[in-house]
Image (cartoon, rainbow, N blue to C red; front, side, top):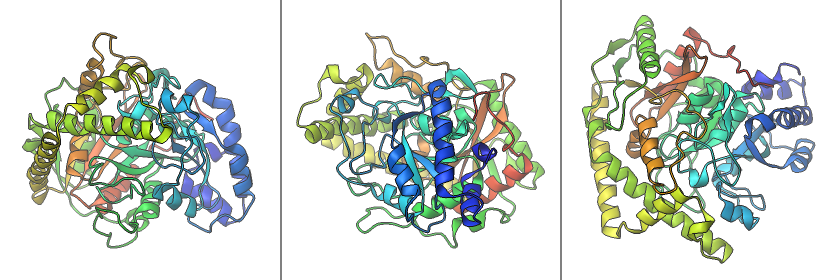
Length: 479
C-alpha cells in the first residue's frame, strides 16, 4: 500500500481484481494523500469523501477500473446534486449544484471509478493556467511557484503529485495537453466525436471540445479511452470506431512511420523557448533511432494560416457569452460584470459582438482550414511539436492589467501556439513527458496523428515510453 501513490490506475484495478486491496482501502489511502498534500497544490476544491466511502464499500460496477479512486474536473463531467461551479464565483456564491449527470460521468462510474471530489479550473476554462479568483491558483508539484497549466490544471497536479492515479480533464484549446506538459503527465486529446458531450451539448455547438483523463502511463490512457469511446444516442458527431480495443494498441508495432517536425510558432504569436525546441528535436532523434523516417523540415504549412487566430477567437468568445447566459438561466439571475473576472467579461462581450453570420463564417473557415491541414497526413503519419512554447509559467504570468483584460488572452496565445489548431481540425494529439530542462521542470512533446487515428498515437507513445521511461520521475511535492 505504501507504493500506491505512483501506481497507475491499471495497477490499482489489478490490486482489487486479485484481492490484494479493497476499493475501500484504495479510497481511504487516496483521501489521506489529498488531505495531506492539497494545501500545497490547491488541486481539489470540492470533496465528496463520505459518498465515496459509501460507494467503495457497496456494490460497485464490475468495470475495468472497479474501486479505483479518481477526481472530476469542476467543468463538465457533471454529477447530479454535486457542486458544479465552472471556476466561477457566480455559481460558487449561489451554491450551484448540477441538475443532471453527464454522459461522460456515467461512463466513468460504470467503469468502476470512485470519484473523491472535483478539481480546480480557471473560470469557464478560458485560460491555459488554473488561477481562478473564486478558488485561487493551482501549483505544479514540480515547482509550486509555477502553474500546473490549464484548464485541467487541478486534475493534472493531483495526478502528478500522486493524490489519485488518473483524473478527468477536457480539451477545447489544449486543456488536457497543456497541464500534462506542465505536470509531467500523459495527456491524450481524442478525435472530435470520440467522447460524448451529452446530454446538454454536442460537437455541432461545442466544435472544439473533447473529454478524456490525465494519466501517468500510456496504458492508462488507452484503457480510459476505451471506457469513453462508445457514443450515446443522439450524439451529433461520432468518430470512426477503432479496429480493436484501444488497450491492445499498447505494445503493438507502429510500423515505420513518416514523421514531420514543427518547432517554430506557426501562428506568429511569439517565440518558442529553446528548452521546448530541444524537447521536440530530441524526440525526433529518438524516433529516428527507433527506425522511423523523420523529415525535420516537413510540417503542414497551412497551420501558418493568419486567419486561424480570428477564427478560433470568434468561436471561443461566442462560447463564453453563451455559457454566461446559461448560468443566468440556471440560477434565475443575470450575470453582471462584477460577477466574473475582467477577462471573462471582456471575452463574453466580444462574443456578443459576433453575429450569427460571422459565427457561421468562422465555422466555415475552420472547416476549410481543417481540410487543408489534413491533406498533409496523406503523405505523413505523425507530426512532432513542442506541447507549449515555454516551460511552466510563474503563477500570475498571464494576469492582465485591470485596464486591458484582453492582454491575458494575447499572452495565452504566445504560450500555447501548438495545441489549439488541432481542436479546430478535430485531430487526436497526445502530450508525452519526454523531457526535463536544467531547472528540473517537465517539458511536454506533442504528437499529432490523422483524424480517428488514436490507435497509431497509442502505439508510438507506448514505444517512446519504453525507450525513454518517465515512471520513475517524481516531483518534489509528492505523496
